Image (cartoon, rainbow over all chains, first blue to last red; front, side, top):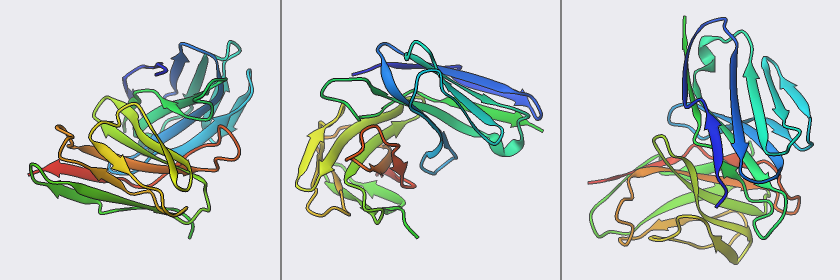
Length: 114
Length: 114
């Protein structure tokens, strides 16, 4: 199946700092999604991107659909303790029999120190 | 409220036993999915269904079975053939008629071996 490389694997930051994480794919994707998962719960959608170059914000979160269509980035500004969790990228390939199916990165574990 | 309900929250299986995980949605979504989550592994697709009475294998279908007799329900059976079933199982749904739509998740079932 498709491979999504998400980095970094984990981050330990101080409250108030900005956070950046990214995701790359081996092939072109036409959809990029970012989810957050709290412990013991299902992932919750944060931002959806559908167009190359698109930059979308959701409060302190900003995500971008890379121009090459093979990568996406998520930034969190002025982190707070409730930002703690696992952040997943997900994408859908541009064509083929798996069109519409999502592939997930392995996640970035974010820890915020007060 | 509309959403995805997974039950039970915790499940224990004895060796050689089949167990069934429930997933119900009242979002009127056509597509439903089952994922397995292991620490540090991200989400891996087990089975998915785009329409009633039809489903496809995902990347790790061996040892699992599903049915889709109703639009609202997509139960997953973990059979005795699955030798390492201990994991967190997530069910998701999306509007299949619009490709690449975000998937929305339930809160998961944690399965453990006795």
